[in-house]
Amino acid sequence: MAALSVQELLNRLLGIQGLRVHGAQLTAQGVVVDVRPRQRKARCGLCGRQAPGYDSEPERVWRHLALGQYVFWLRYRPRRVTCPEHGVRVERVPWAAHGSFFTRPFEELVAWQAQRMPKSSICRLLGINWRTVGTIVQRVVKERLSSSRLEGLQVIGIDELAYRSQHNYLSLVVDHLRSRVAWIGEGKGEATLDSFFDELGEERTQGLTHATVDLSAAFIKSVSKRAPHVRLTFDRFHVQQLANKALDTVRRQEVNRLAGSDEGKALKKSRWALLKNPWNLTVRQGQKLSELKRTNQPLYRAYLLKESLARGMDYRQPKRAAEHLDSWCQWASHCQLEPFVRLAQTIKQHKEGILAYVETGLSNGVVEGINNKIRAIIRRAYGFRNLEALKAMIFLCCGGLEFTPPLPMAA
Image (cartoon, rainbow, N blue to C red; front, top):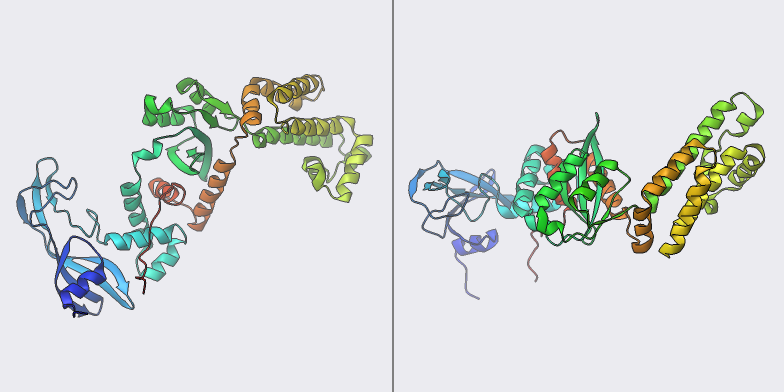
């Protein structure tokens, strides 16, 4: 095997295409390698177009990966060019993004780690500031996040997420088929979702077939207006959540009405017995339901209404589910329980979307799972003061972006 020159050895150790090594120096900060681009003609740092030279900037260094305990730094005196489109700009270098003081492999490593660990751990491991981690994440996501993420959308899920106190919300559009976040907008109203359809465009909107949403009037209105051909789907989780809220409202009304009486005392600690699934009840909770059947008919009727609606969502034949919903709405409309009377009106209004769930089996489960992951990201960072930093982290961890950390060569 032929011996390698120092320049060739450093070139291979750096692992970066498009540069030449012409010297190195060992310092207290690490190994400083003098490099220059292979291309002779300078290019604009923004658009990459060849442009005439203007002058040169002072010498600067870029942080690279480490070999053992020694950090590599790339040193070069970049030229400036006169770009016809962008004016005087620093030339493009093959080892780093424009405006960055870190090499692309180093930023790739930071992004890979940011998907898996908190910023404080990255700072301690790599010896950089936590603000630097955020800046690198935003730059990498901006480069990697392509508008093609909106291509091929067919089944989408829409939901909102509170990311700070004082009612600060984000609206998320999730690609069901690829299980990733496709779009993020600030706010949660109709206008926010309209901006998604504006960015999606008329042609790509026509490719949508289904949209899973909660029973948010603003989202329903936006989808119905901007994509009337899309079939709205309301999953059983949100429908049963409305039934649970109606049942709990009846329970509180009964507790207040019977306060101080023996019947009122019997209602204590009945909430979970009423809201749980029958197969999850403890023996004591089953006894509590039996007591309610004898002592409080209105509340027990509300419990039966809740359970009957849940059974209706179990059907897999849309025709049978439709018949059950019609029968349930008729019962709820005449049950003399105001919360369930209102719920019956809601069910009638959104019946087609509920039946779409029965027919397709689509739910907002993927969206809720991604929401939980985003909440974990927010808790891990103890909150985000910068909305753009939060969006970058969401796309980094939930947008389908993949990064490859530098791995040792196989033996």
